[in-house]
Image (tube, rainbow, N blue to C red; front, side, top):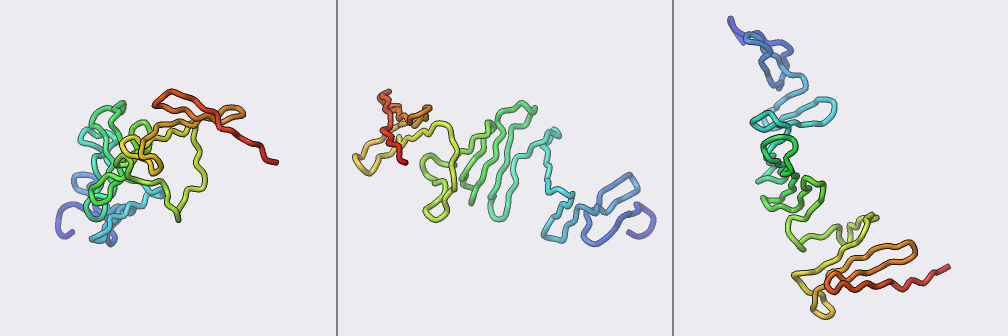
Length: 174
């Protein structure tokens, strides 16, 4: 800055400048930009974006390429049920965490959880619901819809198509 006009305090290389009054500017120590990377150093990594009404939500963050992470919500009050977090690769939704906290695949029956070389160590669940509706199995080329439930001393299998219930034959080993 030269001549009469606003004064700059806290100036240093790559600092983002904000107005602290009509005639004063401040070089933000925790907000820098080197021409390609915007760095926010607030002690705890965080980024808060707001919608046009000042609400704490944002509609889209695009990463490198054409949008690898999108976080969206309805514009409006905080009781809105349309909030979600979407994970995308090349603008194709791969997973969504919906407003109820459910983790959903981007497409029905198209993604695996883990692989033969990268497995999840343990899976903790209540009932296990299994269905290949819309496709067929490799044994008899039909589809099924089952639920496995646990009892105090037994495991049960419920055929959700027929309503029939079965108990697994468990043999204790010592």
